[in-house]
Image 1 (cartoon, one colour):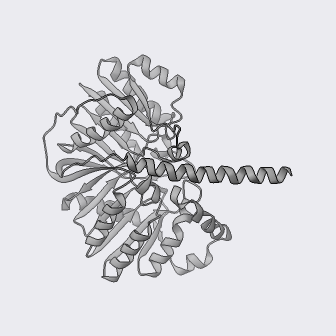
Image 2 (spheres, rainbow, N blue to C red):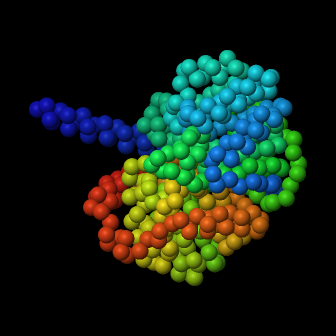
Image 3 (cartoon, rainbow, N blue to C red):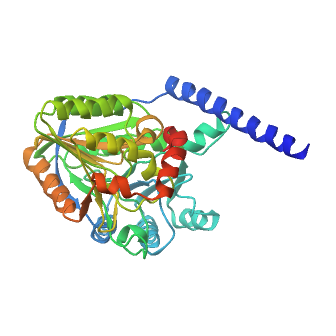
Length: 395
């Protein structure tokens, strides 16, 4: 009798979660936010390691005169996190307006004590995407995955890095953490600021206008901020337009049927397709959820490699050496249909080639998927591949 009761309770919870998710998705689509930005221009500096990125970000914060706006999906309270928070608190005490956002789940380490110290220093802090009823289960899974910093309206940062010592390569398990992040100047910074202000307004109910300072320009780019939509269609168009080469870097490769079919069609018309993911996953089931797609793509003529020089967290796609995107969106269902993301689309050959060379350099530390690897994979991987199929919409 007790077992029957427990079984009924478990089934009831699962059914309620499914209903919650479906209704939450419908509500999300009805309220979806679109931030249309035109093609613009800007200059860039590319980072592949966390330490120099954090040093430059904190130095730019130290030099701020007017305002500092920062949002990271994950802000850990450790060596890197404290370096950032201390920089923000010091600048706020100098009278500069400082606003800090963190995702409610990703930045859970910013506890009451930390928030109090931020407020006392003059830093305006808010959490983004706090799960609430109705549709609590859906909102719990729907995260703001963006990473944005804007200093004085003239310097912007966007890319894949979060804030934490693990991203500096100081993890005994992951060791080097490979990612791509950009420091931007020029008109493109205003679109990053508008994206931040939209998130800030949702969290605080405040309305503000971007503070624009820098009009220098060079490379042709566009900011694309997605809200659980658009991304799948954009990726499909990029793949369809390819004529020679598609290079994809992502920590999680879980394509939709439409995108997998588009990649296979690209191979059929002679396009070289290469996908790189990390050898070591950072979350349960994410690697196994994508492996069946990789086997299918590999057997269709694509190339798959596992980065083994640390953990590969970059989110990039490079097409025909003439176009690329780089940002926060992974090549998975979560980034396409659940999370808020922000990417930069790059239309300048020089800029694209810079990214391409960084990508190709990382492939030198990667192992190629082949039939031997597939045949010799462990029993646990085979079992997890089957289990992961149930969770693909959340991965």
